Amino acid sequence: MKIPRELVHTFPLFIPRSYKTSEGNKTGSWRFLRPGYLEKTAPCSSACPLGQDVPTIQMLTVQGAFKEAWEVILRENPFPGICGRVCFHPCETACNRGEFDEPVAIHMIERFLADTARRYGLTPHLEKGPSREERIAIIGSGPGGLAASYFLTLLGYSCDVFESQEKPGGMLRWAIPFYRLPLDVLEEEISRVESIGIKIYCDKNITEKDFQSLKTRYNAVFVACGHQKGRNLGIVGENLPGVVDGLDFLIGLKRSEREPRIKGNVAVIGGGNTAIDVARSLIRCGAEPVIVYRRRKEDMRAFQSEVEMAEEEGVKIWELKSPVKVEKKNGKLMVTLQKMEVSELDSDGKAIVVPDPSEKEEVLFEMVFKAIGTEPSEAWYATAPPARDVHDLFSSRIVFEDDYPVLYGGDLFSSAKTVTNAIASGKEVAIALDAYFKDGKAAIMPEIERCRVGGSSALSMEIYINGERSKRSPHVVSFREINSDYFTLVPRIPQPRLLKEERVLTFAEIDLKISASMAMKEAGRCFNCGICNQCDNCYLFCPEIAVVRRTVEDGVFRQINYDYCKGCGLCVVECPRNAMVLEEESA
Image 1 (cartoon, helix red, strand yellow):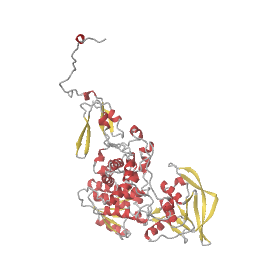
Image 2 (tube, one colour):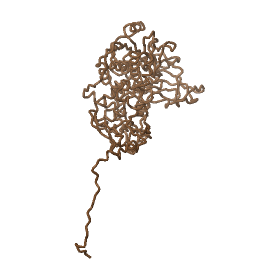
Image 3 (cartoon, helix red, strand yellow):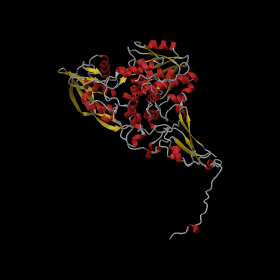
Image 4 (cartoon, one colour):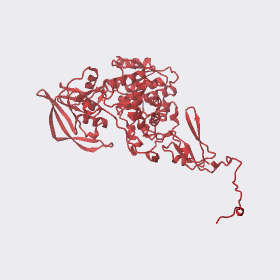
């Protein structure tokens, strides 16, 4: 039934409206918890011997800022092209992403950035400190010596490097096969180090007498000669013709214009990286190498990936066998092998082996290569006895002779005989010397402690010079502190490399380059643990609109307006990468 219009009564609608702002109601006074921005330390950075700022490198790579990412590496590591190829990347073992799906391929991205910079002839912007009057002599131009000269020069010191060989690089140049480290990569990175003002004097073998002379002309000497001599087996017949030192073999390969042709079964004694390099090089020379190792395969000191590739290429590994005698027989070498057995495991899970006297065997080989370890080529290279005024740091030693500093690092001090650890040793030497020259002996250890990354033995030069990283918390972000709801499962991009059938025919580099899109995709898998990557979750989720964004010269700056922040903690909970903190409000 239709109601007549005159019977319908209408009423005015009144909507309440405030003519004053609510800004006067400062709801922040209700707060008893206080959120704040606090960047922290990623586990990959703490695990890296060089303490590199890995999450920042990945963040810049995702953005396509390749030069800037490369320059972040150079703050802590002068050799990204080398380390991207030969480093054992413990950063990836520590990567939080490994608990989610697979670790980020950090070393592959580092290599990509270095190769991109080399391809386009980029020149890094490196800030140098004010010039200092002290002059430093460095004996040896391997990774430790060159790294020390690089960081000392950036700190303002004058460095002279003395190299006994005709070209710089040490074992980087003479011992690492081309299939792992191409010569052009090595020379380009050494040239960049020289370009900042370092003088390298080649064909200058420093004798013990010369060493004493250096101390009268320089304010400090860093002995970084490395280990350039192979160890003896200590068995009968090891000096027979056909028994070759593995390190000498690798050096001979690098010096010769043509690879030698070696046929038949050959034995490689040892289980470290040198043994693997020797065996894989022998494959490429036509031989059929067998690695004879006294412990189990899982106990080998060589990098696991190198062991796996060696087996792919045809290298055989005989476990729990130790040579006890070598003798000539019918123009070949007969090696007597003693069977070993595991008696127990040490604290690291490595096998402690003992001989099984009941079992021996005799095997004929065309040649035998010794690769059980290395040692200094000169006795005086050895570090000073601890009875003197000695300061042992994490990867180097300082000996004071009447307040004159002599430093030892790299292989001469550290048990971890790797390229990355040698570079770390050179950085530590630079920090220690700078602290000593500025504030004396007492300042060395406090300064070393101050620039540790996440409480590990890794040191950061950026922290030492009070850069942005010095503002971060040393707290290492764990996987449980990552808000994994914001991440999806994405498979790791595999390293492209030559087929094994191609690899064994040439000494060409095995690992192939990746494209920019692949690098950006892989870097995008990074959680960027502990650092802000501008995701804006804090801004978007704040119910009080208390997060304020301001555009500054270096990007977008965020701060919390505590007049209105009620301390609900939503911003902290929704931060995917734990770059915020929630603390109890002070009274």
